Length: 68
Image (cartoon, rainbow, N blue to C red; front, side, top):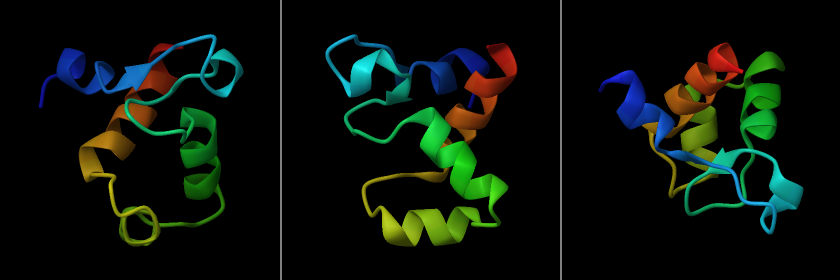
């Protein structure tokens, strides 16, 4: 998946999660997902806990963090 397609999964809306970047269609912030990864959670752990997410959603968070 191309960078732009991944980044389209991340939204910024001042009315959702106080304007923090979040995964489109969820209330999961990029910051939260990165924090899970930083504390040792694997993609599989996160995907198991949050059934609606995809690996591309997690990759989008990582990519977004590199662009910020």
